[in-house]
Length: 126
Image 1 (tube, one colour):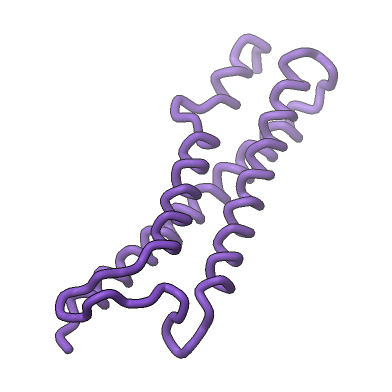
Image 2: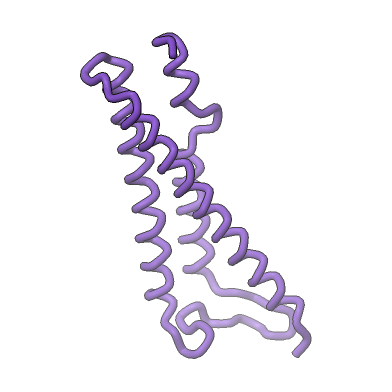
């Protein structure tokens, strides 16, 4: 592998950290605002299904987003070390980058399933 090809392997066209921050903001905004459903009026966001507190779910999501963000920052640091010549562990940088990408993809899929579940519940007739 040529040294000139390293940046193209480790960089992404879309800035995943920016997407992560946008998703985190959207999750926080959605969890703190009340939900207005058809024929339901305002539903309090403090209690979820089965009496589970919203704050527990919110803290779980925030922890997951923080862990993914940490992996992405770690991958970025490893990439910078390889590009500046501080280390020659290209395999370590590639593994960190792949791990961060997979974690981000998993988080996006979990978000998609949550949105899909919410939409299905909203379609239910009471």
